[in-house]
Length: 203
Image 1 (cartoon, rainbow, N blue to C red):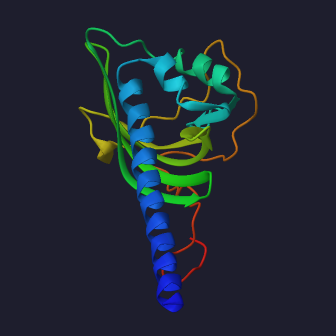
Image 2: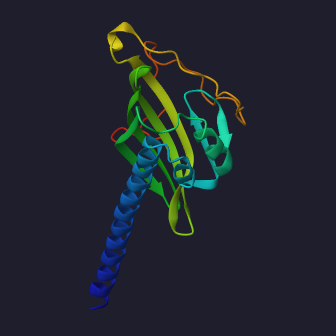
Image 3: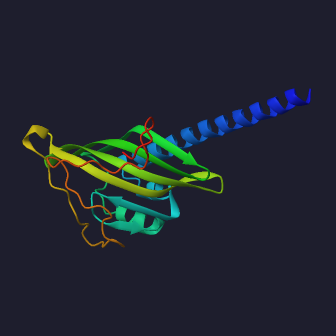
């Protein structure tokens, strides 16, 4: 009887870990998807409030913005949403690793950018993000978006890409870019946070 009880306790403990892992996965997917939906519609305050108080943001080699309020200031420099504006950032292909109250994830964003009679582009970004569980809720601790390409819609990516915008008018970063790179047509692979799942070798 004691052996059976011990086995049942181990089984229950394992099931609890699995349930927690599933819950964390869903919560992190919802958190990142929520960021995409808010950015789509220029809801900058809502997007910034997804970040931890000391969270950071780094996009397209423009430098690092440290702290939720600096993230908010950066986001509010992006184009406002309104008539004639398309700014979709679809969050795709999550690969998530949770370690207690911290997590890391790699994502792909498919981007549609358009302003009537002005510009029409599509692009892609790879995110290598980190998250922190704060008072029981997951928040974005590090958002690092590597823009891998922007191309003019009418020309297509076979004609090359649009150069990355390295600065933000009127807003200096708190630290320089952590990785120097160029987008398509240059070849660049954003660093992986994880090892190969079969061989265990660094990616």
